[in-house]
Image (cartoon, rainbow, N blue to C red; front, side, top):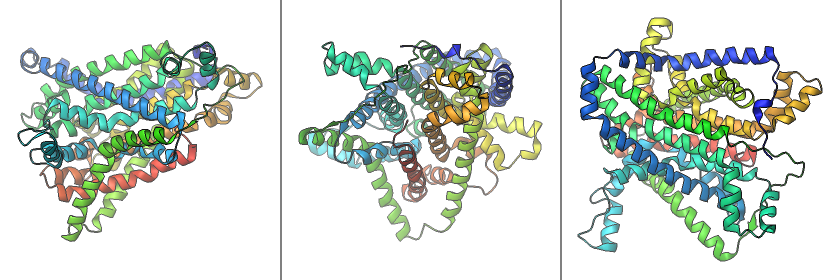
Length: 533
């Protein structure tokens, strides 16, 4: 049975207060976009003409191709992994639940550097390919579309996995039983029952992956694959043409907003709630030895390519760096700086994201939905341009914050809040609004209803939002490069400074530390919730 959350009645005073808060948050987040859009729209027509005839067609094709290919790859990997780990019980399945998420801890630019070494001429994978196929054969170059698609898919499939797993675990087994009684096969039940009912979560995960791809700078710049973000960076650092960079940025924002609006429309038409009191979770099936072996092999291949192999290589390089005396206690400062910024931003994202997500789910008026869409603008704005826009705005409006870590937290919040909003909205959509309505009818105030009824039901999804924002901030690079106070280095900065010179050995220790710091947070997520829902 379908229930429309738009019928939920929120007290007018409470609703107006939340709307004002949401409007203020959205206004802050959209300021950099307004600055970029104004600069682009006031640009000379000759600048636009040059871009349209020389760069824009190629950039559109490359960006769409990469985003589409990565979306397909993340969908296949994320859904299949979530299905195996929720529907089947086999040895080690509890461990695999959090191991699958670990690729989120690896920055895209680190993964790109590693695969540029592995797939490059004379690299380990290239040599292995020659041994298997022939000495005259070479595996595909990492500096191609295939290389960029491989790196980005391995880096983003956990987005879909996290939300797909949450949806599978909250699936009512009664629906599957009804389908099986009517004669449907397991395969037919999967495509006609399971997938349609978890579509909102799948689309939310795909949107996260797509927005991550179109706004990524590190991987595409290293692999020299021409997308909007790479071209924008070239305009800024090579030509010092900030007007052209703003023009390309505006086109990228419009391009990405098409996906956001499409996802919003799809979610609006695909809301499903458990309305029966006979809710029963899916009970995993016990695997045979053959099934256990095949599933484990599949998991080993995916985790090996996305996490284990890169980490082993980083460990090898780190050992060499330690032996040569390159690793010192200064890395403790880098760790503290990264955790301080990431933890502060993730916590702030929950505080400011709650009214936006709640109003979008319970009272989706035009104003509330406009505020939500405004909050997504920061994620699609390229990091370097957003940082420069924020720097100009802060120096003019609040100069006392110039050169402080506060401006970094604001930049992180603007860029990564959508990652938390997706998970928060997905969790709120799975809570039947009739439960909250019943509490209101019994005399509970709106704030108490949310604190006592709603929050306990969505705490798993909100914790998932916190972890997504935290890990994203740990890996952030462009804004930190441009906005950090003098002498304030994070782990990501140290990775970039060393790896940009192809000093893989020196870049490995901070890259490995990013992973080490992120792993306990992932374990906390799975142990506190028992799932990712």
